[in-house]
Length: 451
Image (cartoon, rainbow, N blue to C red; front, side):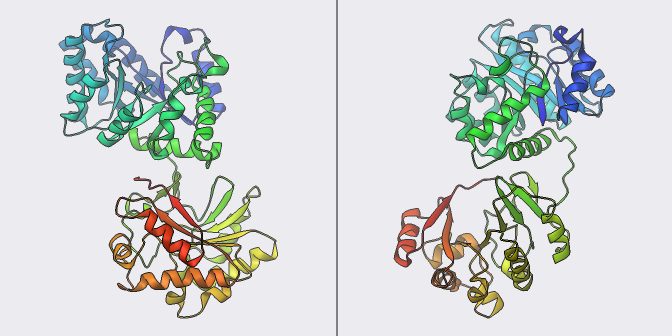
């Protein structure tokens, strides 16, 4: 777990700060980012980061304290920001709810600190309250936007705008409140752009509402996100949000490539990076991660390595042959593994681009029958023109018919067959549904995850 927004330097922790920090780490919090709100708080954040390997700092002036951002204070903030454990400038922004600093001074301090972040190449942690339009006007006029929208206060439209500009959206304890709009907003977002936080000692989750918040209560935020995204387990959301945070704040992360990986109740096997298509929407073109797993293989695994990886898991419902490449390019290994796993009574699924018969120059579908329970064929187009545009197949312009035929042959061989299509603006979903209906195979529409 990771808490991207904590205030452990605040007086609420004066009596037990070290104990709380140690307990949170023992309870599974891998990283904490302690956020400055003024000069003194920024100094203390850096001190905490120096003391604990797993704590990083952000330095800056909260909009409430903007009136105190003198030239000398700004120079010291800039000096602190160059510390190797400072991950961001923040929290900065606009807060017109209480106006503890005059709005015009808030805007000047906001822009000044944004410019500092640009100068140092650091992301920002933004605090915006009842000033979304004003903040948006300032941010939209900038060449560079990166960082986190902390305690996100907006609706779906503002969330989409924030992501479009380059920000990650942070959710904390309030997402667990019965009347919170957070779950509704989060549901509209790609999970790859969501960050977890606490804002401790404030905004404790529902279980501890009105009590002191602490970094390990981020667990309740993750639990709520698993309700919002039921496809994912707690461990999935934990892993995904930690990767998101490491990207947003450039934090170090142990991220070895996976041969065998788990998402929800399914165990996946990553056989190869090679593929006979070059789909522009493939994660391989966006950073090699799927659901927080690094699938960038340095070499192709052998059967022993794969079986050893599978043996590390015992709580899955099915095994899926699906990585960043096309599994049928290693058809012999695919069949050999399937035979061994089938003997153990494991439910098997193959996710494929449907070019296996052409790749192997044989009736691969006949070999799959009796081994695989499900074959999912990526249709991704209603015709060859669109298919060639979005998938760039290496086998030429007439491959689409072969993909459809492969699906039909799998279906005729008694394998439960599903066609899938990614929801893209170039693809007519209704036309794809007609293709599927005409050959009697169900169609699954998948959301496009942009990164």
